[in-house]
Length: 442
Image (tube, rainbow, N blue to C red; front, side):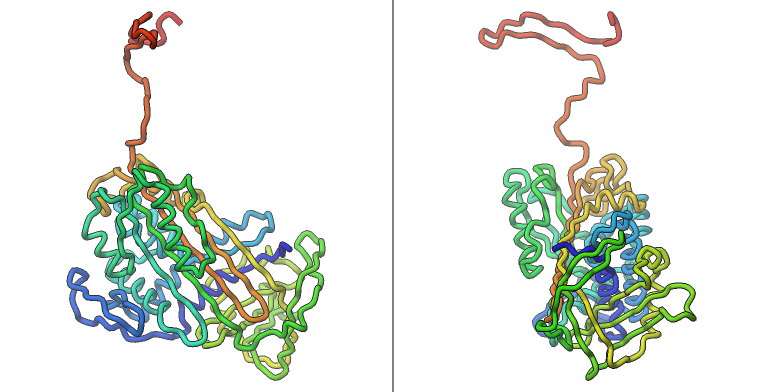
């Protein structure tokens, strides 16, 4: 049953994960030299990215930038149709951060403006590395991991400097594939990697029409989360109840219920008469391990559109800071599943970065050393989530596909040409001519 529930789960969850509520750890590469001398180390089972220059302040700034992009991306998806929304701001930002490392000129300016990336290379790279390390810790009580990869046409002259940056700061190891002669096999390889890194939830990120024999490279990011509620819902209390749509219609949904008289949750109620604006209730449900939570923003009087119009990262932060522990809450939430896919090429062009997708204007000379040689021909983001009595499982993945510019087969007769009509069986030319000016004789 489709639940017409507009949700800010992705934004709120990513905001918590990235800001980390102060969970910083000391980078392990302090004063160990530049990327060219970087030697990966391990923390537990994880190979660490080069976060030597990361600072708590810069990491918080980068997290805020990613969250700001998430809110703006949400606004672009909010087309008034009332459908469900789910995506990972972090996944999209991480994939395009790798692309940005090879962008130059106007193309770089547009990407940086849309994603709010720090212009300082050292700060941006080191703190993306820190986020990667942070998210891939051996977590207790829940599963959270992310991965990056670069897939390169085997004879494509990509710059070693670019590959070193992607590997050292994003852990995006490069793998050679043959997009020219084995396009489908290459696509299956990428999709298998995505499936493996999303707990099997994202099975076909790259569609058949999104790569071809002129593909130069594909950049991918995957993120996966699975966590059990710290206090789980009793499935015996789940019952079919009414859910009121924005249209005024009502549908029946499986509604989970929890009587939290023996527990306290962070809660904020701004629906009292004293609040004239931004009237909502805010609830935090933590997962086991206590480092990750889901936040629910419930507007008063079924007026989600008003909340969406006024919502900003600053307001979310202020509301979270104002939350207090509350016991005896009657908590009722619908079980829901979502599987969403978005054409990033279309959306990101609308958000202000058309150059990257233009075969004549794109400048990714930082990738191959050539201006206007490649452009982004396709890019997609896919995300799904399941919320039930036990907890939450969510996954998302992003791909960015670079294509050779100006070399696709074409025949544009925009200058004088010769033509002939020939009998194919005998080879006899029956008619022959030249067109020097097509307008003559018309």
